[in-house]
Image (cartoon, rainbow, N blue to C red; front, side, top):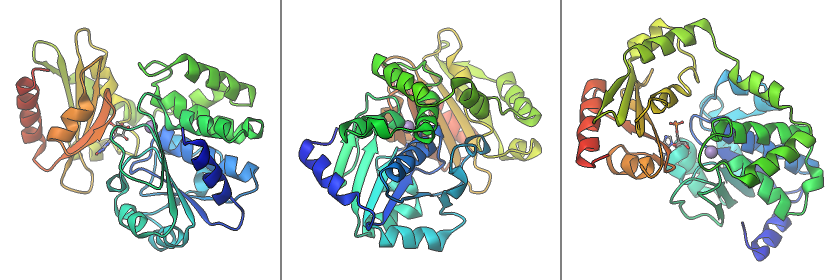
Length: 334
Ligand code: 5GP
Ligand code: MN
């Protein structure tokens, strides 16, 4: 948590006359959108306006969240996003650890005069004016709750805040399953339910959103899942052509990588996907126990994240990327 002196300073910055912007990472997920909107609703409960800005669009299954449709998407509203960042007095940076994770917005962020406040749970955060980083906490949404507690504002938690924070905790813990899920997580979630978050409604809005084409895409991926390195590594992939054939929409492949990890004996799963518009391969890594995919992705695939969940990219072809990957896991003895 921020130190008491920092909290005092932050409190003095959170006043109605200050312009406040909340930024989150590229390809926003449930935790990114949930923490950003949760913070926005908390600030509103304090009588303070804030705008949420994302680098690009986010999946349809997150658009039910209160005020998700008011989020300024930089890729569509470039000038508005620039002006907001440039004119801000305070910028909250949520669920990312480096300006490089927010694309073009990162350049604007670095040049902005605003005080920059980081709240994030990824490894190796860069320097910001105020840093609350904790890599043991499963979701930035949980950290927003701790921040509200530290500000002594728990009674301000309302239904909107509760719904947003619940969603991010649920998605980033894979439905309260991942290793970092703690008793604290469950205590907070219990409070959020008391404040109005409905688990069955939120689960259904977020996860019961399959389309037939998404399930066909999943069937295709699962049909050719490959296991290498004595059954320890699972490899999944999709080409651009396949994505187009199945009418791919943002978020359709979310969670595919986890199926690899559910195979008995698999310690690491990697999902490779050709980007729809640009010539690069987007990679998702998931792992068990002490297999550190953050380090692995940083070292070989220009990425990062958490010990057991990370992302990366490659500029080689899909086939070459997968070959390179197989070589690296052998080299690293994973
Ligand atoms: P996903 O596989 O769901 O895209 O990402 C898993 C985790 O790794 C998320 O916490 C995400 O923020 C992080 N991540 C994904 N892609 C990248 C990347 O290219 N660079 C870094 N540093 N982190 C990433
Ligand atoms: Mn997160």
